[in-house]
Amino acid sequence: MFWTVTLSLLEGFLGTIKLFILTLIFSLPLGLFISFGSMSKYAVIKYPIRFIIWIIRGTPLMLQLLVIYYGPGIFFGVNVWGSNPSGRFVAALFAFVINYACYFSEIYRGGIQSIPVGQYEAGQVLGMTKRQIFNKIILLQVIKRIVPPISNEVITLVKDTSLARVIAVYEIIWNGQAFIKSSGIIWPLFYTGAFYLIFSGLLTFLFGYIEKKLSYFR
Image (cartoon, rainbow, N blue to C red):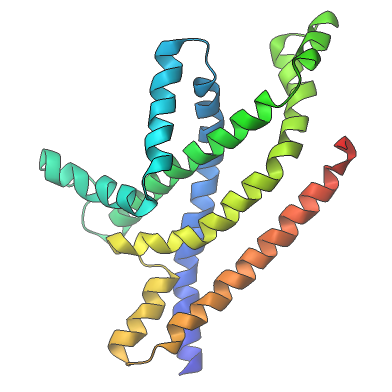
């Protein structure tokens, strides 16, 4: 029974890892673009983006998953995602990317705005363009400052992937919970915690290593 449960949880964990990796691939760069928009000098760009960020950060991710998956069918009479597993996964991925991109955008914005204005001015005095100033002077300092909050969000994402089951996306919690119905045992559900702990531990070591490599900015 133990190996049967382990294999089932490993299968579910692959779904968790897939959602986790794809969310980071899309949300990290999207968050940077959103942060630029939220810092725009044009009010028509800045305030709508900040309003969207406020909504996303102020409402539960579970609610966003339900609205994104069921909303088009309820409001427009069209289920754009379909009822198959791949469609549900894409809907979940879309919700996670939008949610985490908004959180990452605020981290980026805080990091960029924390750099003293004098460093921008020094770059201009040296004849550097705005792009050169950002890429060669600002960017690495921003990365150093945002690594700790980014690592917190990434580890939170590991656990948040379990919310995808509300729209029937197969992940590790779903597989662990299935044993309650099929075999009447609950320990596989607790067993899933070991997977989360190990994965979160590996990420903690990884980000600790990255922080150490960036310590030369101190």
